[in-house]
Length: 451
Image (tube, rainbow, N blue to C red; front, side):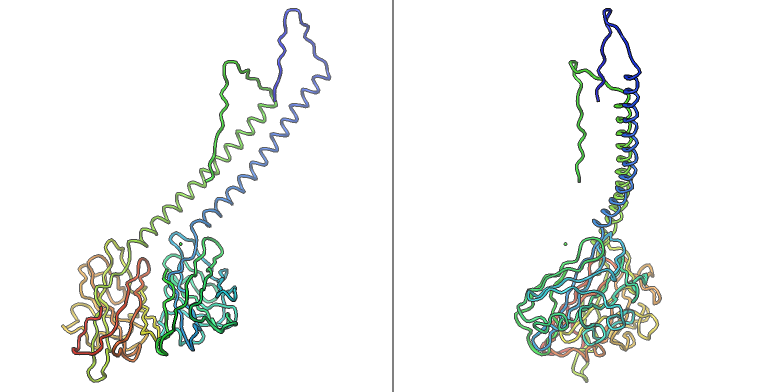
């Protein structure tokens, strides 16, 4: 808007009429209305910007991570899948009721949702003897089941399956029920898809089934192991030849634009504060995720001469360098002998669940140091300078060394010669400890170093 000012010279005559005054007042009113519209629009924009900022933060920081997929083979087909997932570092709560799995075997593409009934739910606080031998874990049709592996705050229930920081769950799929063309997943089949939550980045499914499913006793296969707008201000410089002029109407519009810019700046500042808070939280959780974890120092086994198999094993563990304290009551052991896959948890109540250093009495492979259960492991304390590890609260930290005892005669009926054993020790946070060894071709001693 430009006001042209006519300079009155000594020969000019200045005059103004009623009509000119009416036009002038009308221009001021129009400018006022325009400013009012801008201010109202800016208020709406502020509310929309705040909502968009909040949703963007949620979208960027939230997501599901897939870190393990295991298949069970029968009759030369993979008939069951388990997809182990967790919330990404810094993620908000994820409702598995609002999560779906998109999966394809190149012949079919299926969308799977949560079952929600007893057929497809298991809370593994007491451990699971053989997940692929538990029929109710794998619902029929286009549904997936949930098995809770770790849930310290009990946020994940059958009716309200919400996972958050530190939680780990297994999503179970009956592939014979969804891939009806082949009745399962044949050999050399490309399988891909996603685990999609309500907000955030999805977890990726991508693997190729093995070229052969081997012998009838090798049923389990590890298929996959766990991915600004610029703002410019354009300034027009007024040079000495430029003429700056402004009228009342233009001033009102200018003030309204300044108000809009101020509101926009306020939204940006508030959004940046939220982003900073979220970034700090994500950074802290990422540091914990990267630096924490369980280190497996050794795995020893006890050979029973009378039974002619390994009946007991001890997994010697310690926190990784720089790791935060780890609660063994929130730790799970996943272990398989290639035929069955078991999940073991700690229960302080049962006999043999905990042995302190002073009660080891020299011989660690004593049955009193082990539980008589296929779903529980025991804790044997080797070194604990600060006495942080107790039966009711088995927490280990820097410098602590403990043994996790497993009665494999209860889990697998013992370990015979030439058996491939694999699995992981998962703490609440951080990298898991890896179990992988093959039993000897013959047993020449009672105590055997396995890994």
